[in-house]
Length: 99
Image 1 (tube, rainbow, N blue to C red):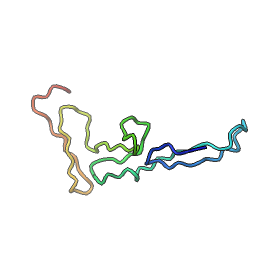
Image 2: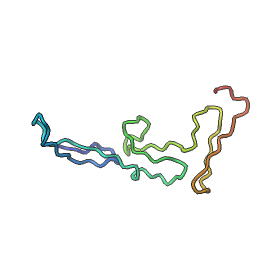
Image 3: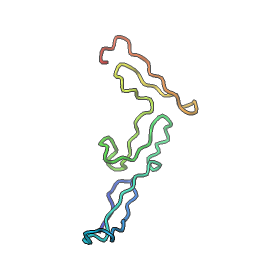
Image 4: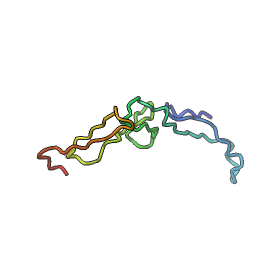
């Protein structure tokens, strides 16, 4: 049985399920996500290994959403990476009506 899911940020391994009550399975695959494998070096992004989320890179399995995205379309979301920890500013966009 091949366990490789071809996603770089997951650890692929067999998990012994020989104690399965049905007795028909002796091994299954386990794909454990590792966020540290997704570090993009940008302190203003989250480093997530979440291949099921749909917004990930199809090869690496990584997604890098911004810490500063407030979800409001009428703001400009900025991150100051120099401060530790990084700080956010969400500035209003003049005459924006998308809220």
